[in-house]
Length: 320
Image 1 (spheres, rainbow, N blue to C red):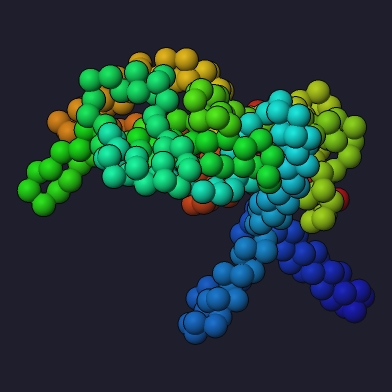
Image 2 (cartoon, helix red, strand yellow):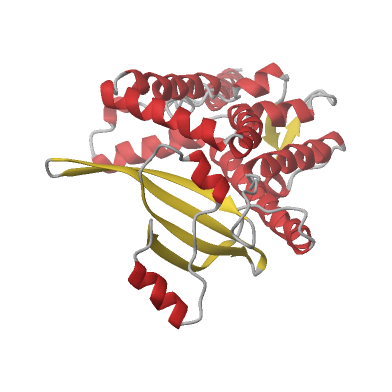
């Protein structure tokens, strides 16, 4: 009888210990007694054990995201080559600058004669660009010929204007405009970020919708669990701040190209306001940082197991 009681007590004690260990692993806490961690090595071991017990595999999720994003960018690179070849798309993706010429404005007679003797045409500022800077003192410009992997050669002109000197300081304004192959017409260069975001959301949402894993999740042994109709929404919410920025960029880009003079006027007002008081312009980036931190739950300070977009879509990342 005594032997049976002792065996029963030992079993109950082992069960209590195992229960404590499971509870500690589930909550991300360790049952290691920190009172005896006096040496630096012991404290490091305790810290590493506490990281291992953190739920929902934070570092795996981060690695999976980076793998998927790199693969999406490579896919976009492959897709963009035939689009550039046919001239349907011009974007600053894989851009190579082949040559640049920096010239004063107006060009001195000696420079004009030198170009004429060499049988070369002296580059000039296109009329639409010069009209946009009407009333400003143009000091010079730099004309660069660029191409994307040798396709769709185009030009970029950067103008320096309204140069002022105050003591030992020199202030100057700059304006960069994309031009066509002949460097005479303003063209719209569409940004790459909206396409990267659209491909990422579409491809990952499609794979999750079909019950499959993304390449990053498959490589790191993860699987997303949740309602079947919210996978696209989850991927969009995960990148929500960047999606908003891309949409704003797309809306403003045609306006900048169509009304270059208006864009220059806005830049002048902003420069004048910054010269008067720079403090108000610190509020906008600070507010954006706080908004980003709130949306992503300040994960760099404390990982809660599920991000805000996971909780909104009622989803959870688990081990595959």
